[in-house]
Length: 216
Ligand SMILES: [Zn+2]
Image (cartoon, rainbow, N blue to C red; front, side, top):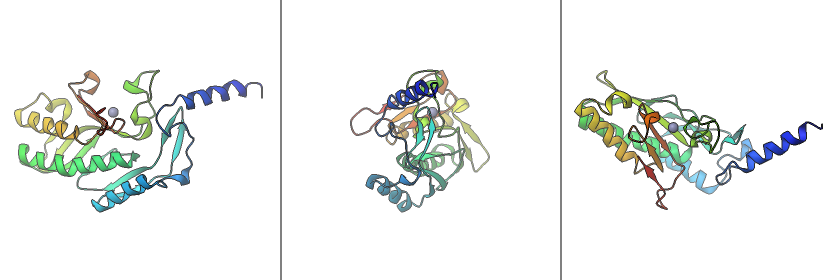
């Protein structure tokens, strides 16, 4: 009994310092998609022919939690490694896949994209994988890392090789990066730092509306 008190206090402090609105409250599984904005977001997915499974709210300790998240089941393109995603992230990602990735592939590479390879969504970790500091948006299922695109003609265009690769691959990837900056609050790519040489990081942690959006 004597031992539990400091641990409890520590847990409370960690939770309280978790930052972000609504992220310091332990979520209840059944409370997912109860708010009006959350419900509207699901409706918008449905209206855009996106198939998804709503996930129960979950807390994973250390401030990591998924609130109002979905698992994408089917949309315009196949995608690998997609786990829990907040609904606004899922909406931006599926819209980007349909309205940016597919047309850009036809325009620059003359083929259709059949699969978007990602490096995942939810992951309980700090920003840049550091040991201390702010939790990454991945810790809330509010970020996705995109690594490569597989084309119908068999080509695979990766961020790692294509960003400074052939002209058509460079143009394709730059167009995707540019269009992502209009859809996601934060966009980080190879120009940001070495940790992003092999993927685009997209998250909804910043707002397009208040001018805090970040695009590198
Ligand atoms: Zn990331």
